[in-house]
Length: 639
Ligand code: AHR
Image (tube, rainbow, N blue to C red; front, side, top):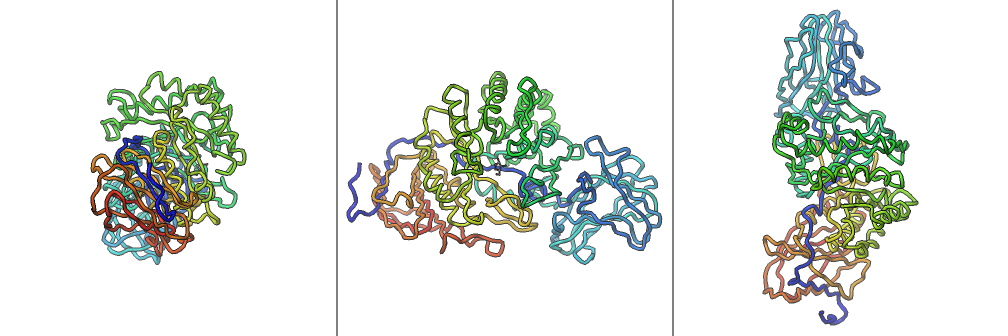
């Protein structure tokens, strides 16, 4: 115990010698969902939109090009590339002139960078071996680079070529021209920058993955979110449809297509080019535990709420068992062999699996045990994630009876329903976060672990401002303080493509060429990059409990002490920090701070780092020192 400081000034006392609670390496992670064009048009680096002509508006993003030519084009279905890809484009060229074909505008234009190369590929066939000219063009039709595809035959074949760009364009397009009379069928028309993350084919946008890597996430949850559930069961995400040859992955429409009447997105589809293999690979690249969430025989309860009868869940249970084999099984097992065939003979070391997204009610708890028992019987090593519904009380989340749903779930767990990890969601006002920073102090440390699986502070106008970021930081001090209960946490949603959003706020904003982290991104990164191995007991005296929040921990490798302090108020806080029982002499510490002039401040494409952490070295007097915690700030001291 420490004495009350003189003049009633705030005092933060850390029992640095005490061993404290262990912090899970999965404490801070990522929630990925294909919402706001997070996958197609986002993380997935494919530049062509509607590459396989499977959109309902089958020529969406395409336009006919006729250069002194005579021809016509149509969508055809006879003799398709494969059963999962039933539509293709049929060109009939009577007079080729200077070329007849079509152009793709990508997602609001195809960005082309001068000096960079682009990988083009297409599946094509032709009755008269018609050659195809492939051109990267700028906004006014000038060619920036081209290649010619030859050798087409009456059978489908895949062709590829690399196109170096001699000049750039922000809103370019990809043009394909038949340059001789005849017929040509085209499918899976694809263009990727050569520079994807790690230079992979069928790869991811390097700048976006870089932002994720810099967070050093402990896990990657995928593929959602509500898209796991689907509007109806036909629309649900089934992972087996997302692996293998990309040309054979059945395109699905996106559940966020027209889910919100105010922001319809009628052309929002999932190509599944970014599928489960790619998610596992991304997790591995990031050093993050893969956390897949699978459908449990229920479609989105906010939408059609379809239910698979409890005695007919076999294929859904089998999906989960097979996924474990796909991720971890030996290469001579049926699903392990598919992983190996895709280029990853080694196990992905899957340890976590979610049963349904944010389901609720008796209908969920009739189904969940079927999955739990079947998986535990074969794979007791897998930690299973269950859910407490879409909100934790009637003020959080987007449902007014959130508390009843949450309570029903926790009553079940208390009554003996088995649960390893319970997923809780809260999307609510910044003040709610400040008021709830202590919510896990009341949870039973002997109960199931908690995964704060989706959360974000929602301010007026759904802005990504400093007010939200500080409120989230305040709540996270409470998650960390209760690291024996909360073992995983992730902000949601992760990505938003400007002009293509269904949901705000979001962690990272991007457009065709740019990306920036919001203040909330920096809060997540500051915690995650400084994740302690243990938390240490900490006491705050003489402080405004609605404004000052703190938690401390230790980095076992470096032996450094970590102090996280949120000052959500509008006045600086001069505090004494007392590292009780610790003999620390005068020394330097690293101070990382996030702040700005106003709680309303935000980052933007024009000013992407207006709010970004700054690092300085500071001198501390010893095991007791004074420090000014700036108004509107989040500070990490590494001592
Ligand atoms: O993050 C956006 C949505 O919020 C998720 O898809 C869903 O799980 C929650 O309702």
